[in-house]
Length: 100
Image (cartoon, rainbow, N blue to C red; front, side):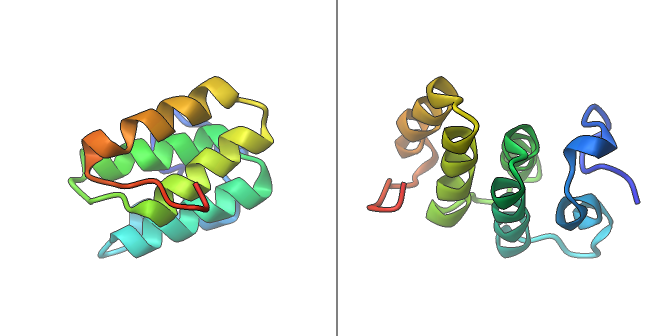
């Protein structure tokens, strides 16, 4: 298995994130689940990379994917990154909700 992104070292990726790049059809649900797994595992950098990969693959991130990424940053005390995600959500046609 290889990391989702070549610049992302394998130790930063929890197992749920490693094989997403090898899936025949990656969709927003798969990415959101992987971002959530990263959040739960304390891998905020991997969560942000997956969110970025969604954009690169022209997959629409939703409230779930953003909420998990914001939470991952918050748990890691990366509050500036979390706020940046929150402020960028409307530009991506995603409305923050009670969870985010």
